Length: 182
Image (cartoon, rainbow, N blue to C red; front, side):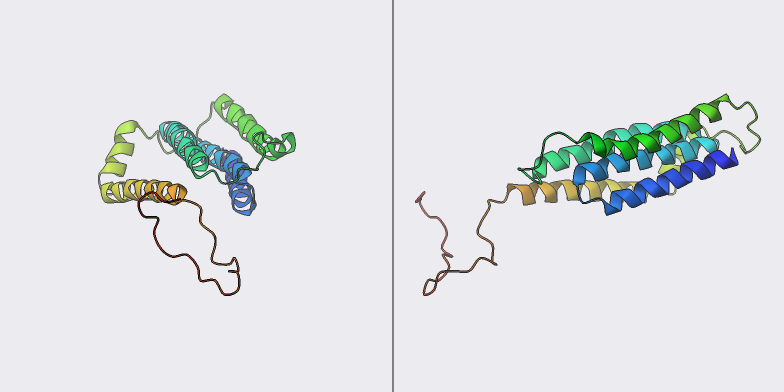
C-alpha cells in the first residue's frame, strides 16, 4: 500500500502542476479533476474510504460544477471553440488510468497492514465541525464572496479600455447616460 500511496501522490502533484501551467481554462479544470481524484486515492490508501468518497462527491463533483458554472458565467472567451480537442484528453486520461489501475489493485489487496484503523463518519464530522468549524465557515464565505464578485465582474458592460487612444482634440466622454439617450 505504500507504493500505491506514492503513485497516487505523484499523480496528484503532476496533475496539480499541469493545472497551474495550462493557459486554457478548460484544460486546467480537467487536470484539477484528476488531481482531486488522486487525492481521494491517497485518502483511500491511508485507510479512510469515507473521506475518499467525500473527496470525490464534494470536491470533484460539487466544487467542480461551481467552477464550470463560473466559467460559463464569465464567458471567458466567446471565440473559443466549444469542444475540447481530443489531444487535450490524452494527459488526463493517462493519469486517470494510472489511478484506476492503482485503485483496482488496492481494493484487491486483502492485507491492509498499513492502516492504523478505519476512519468513520463520526470521526470526520467531529474533527471537521469541532475545532475547525470556524475555518469551514470562513471558507464557505470566501467561496460565496468569490462567486458574487465573479457575477459582478461579468455583469459590467463593456466599455472602451483606458489603453485606447482618444482622437486628438477630443476629451473622453465621462457623463452618464441620462434620460435614456442613446
